[in-house]
Image (cartoon, rainbow, N blue to C red):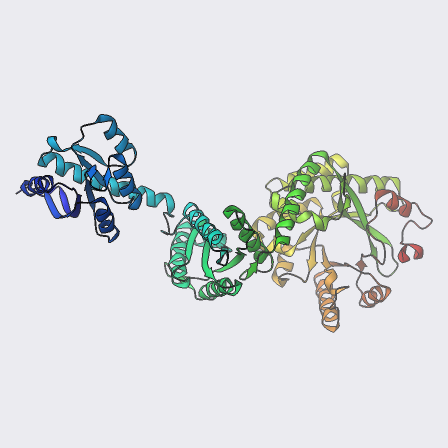
Length: 581
């Protein structure tokens, strides 16, 4: 006995002629290759109602029915249940009609007078298999292949539907939650991408248990997910979902015997009557998510219009900054570094300012972060380094009373880990003629700890050249004693938060005393930043802090002001008049 080529199926025959229906039953009954159940309806409306009940695998549809005729018959049926394959079975032998039906979605077009069991069973089998393949392709087009969750396209469709529903019922409210995983890259880098993928799958399953049945969760891409929270009374419903997600991620995931902890930063955008664009709503949730990430990760933020205004302003800054780098719209200011006992000038810290053609002089706090994020910090950093070295060498030659003044330059982590940084610095020193010992590079603790091995090699090379190294903002990061010994710095810069911050009490003084004692023991120099009052200067001086800088001595000065200072009556120390400015 031949194996059925059509697996067990439920076939719906929509045919008004009892004789034709009987013929179809007889033909399929004769076939040893058809294994299924045949149900019969004589009207289109009955067939549509039966399909709505479910469990129909394929439909044989006559074009001539009491309540419908011709191509409209197929259109009505197909629009009602587009996922069910339909074979047209008609007495109309019309090639143009057949082409039209197939082009609009029919799986086949069979003429009754040509019907026989091999043709019909083959057509049924092909229709079912072709439809399954189409449905799989459709599913893949709208679902993430890794997690099985809806993808960005399907989420966008559902968001469109939610917006359309809200237009019909203005009282209906919903929200979009957009989140990504904090430090997910570290998991990929340390445990491998396979573990990262398994974590995303496990996380998707956990998310499905957290959200409500009527809500939609989707993977937008990478480690980014979105949730559509429907039928809200107020924003508290969205907040509850966000809090459940954060709480749900507190328990670790076990992946290949690794216990993995993960947190998320969540942005919430709530629909209002002015919301019409799904992409804008997703964008707003994304903006709020980045605000949550900037505020400390593992938390949520609710979007407000000011966030979008800030994002637009940031984009404008980035655009202007790219032009500024090309046009070199930057100037250098220099803040004196002095000995606290006698106020002698020992060097300067080079500080960049952006001379914007419309906005005037812009402080680094308003553009350095953007430069870091966009990578513009690399060309800008090289420009600052060369300008500072060239300027300090000019002053060394022009003012021989200060031949040993040094220049201190902040170096970005992105620039410091560049493979060519040592060669680049050596080239600048050679072209400017600045002795290596007159250059002091300031590096933050975070840069050192994130890239310890690569940084250590470069530090050793630079120190061997004679370049001095300072650890900037000391005391605000990890401040590991082992790193102090291992990296052999020349100078520690005590962060201004311990000198002139809002909470500079007994604890801050104790920290400063500890840093000074530690540096003395290790033979490392110290510079106190942010000295703004005589009282602060006197305290530091009495604690034997050797050097300092801050507004009490002088604000960052343009080159002309520095030259006036260096060319004054006392070319070695900050004057009393300068102190009060």
